[in-house]
Amino acid sequence: MKAYDVMSVDIVAAKEDAKAIEISTRIVLEGYNGMPIIDDRGVVIGIVTTLDILKAIKDNKNLDELSAKDIMTRHPATLSQEATTDEIIDIMHRKGIDMIPIVSGEEEESRLIGVVSRQDILKERLNERFVSIGKV
Image (cartoon, rainbow, N blue to C red; front, side, top):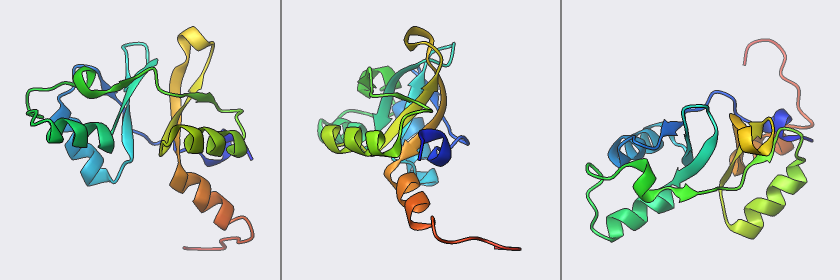
C-alpha cells in the first residue's frame, strides 16, 4: 500500500506568519495531529505539532504573539506519494512523529499534496477486509 492510498488530501496548511494561537485553535477544533507550514509556492518548510505548542506554553510564551516560524519544527520529514506505508511507519517510529506531509515534485520544489497520520494508516489497514455497500 502506498501513501496515495491512505493520505488525507483535504488538509489545512498555514503560512509561516500565521499566529500560533490561530494554528493551535485549528489543531484543537479539527482534531489534527499538527499542521504543515508552507511557503508561497506550497513547499513544506516546517510543521507545527501539538508538542511544539505545548513547549511554547510550558515556556510561558504568549501564543497570541508567536508566529508559526517561531515554534515550528523546520525541515520536517516528508515523503512522496509513492512511499509505502511500511516506509511511513518506519519513519514515524524512528522519529517519534504522528504525521508526515506528502509532497510531489523534485525535492527543491516538493509541493504539499497530502498528509498521512498514524490514524490514516490504521483506518486503511483495519478496513482492508470490509466493503461498504449503499449508504454508510
